[in-house]
Length: 64
Image 1 (tube, rainbow, N blue to C red):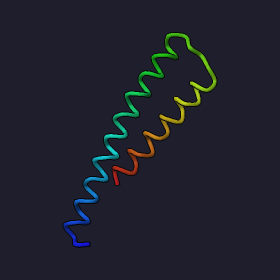
Image 2 (image 1 turned 30 degrees about the vertical axis):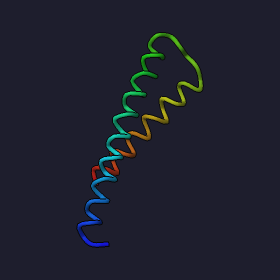
Image 3 (image 1 turned 90 degrees about the horizontal axis):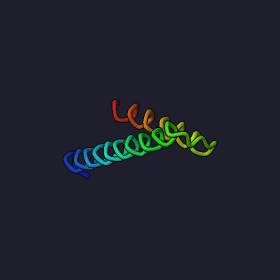
């Protein structure tokens, strides 16, 4: 691969990860809204925590 090809691949990869983070933030907001409306379920709480962790990890990766 040439330098340009590697740069383009890296750029596409970063763009895709940013899109994933945006979608996770939207889904997290929906789940948090469900919790605020009183839907208290252990699986829902675990999902919220895991999605929040995934967002934090991806943001850390993207900042490097």
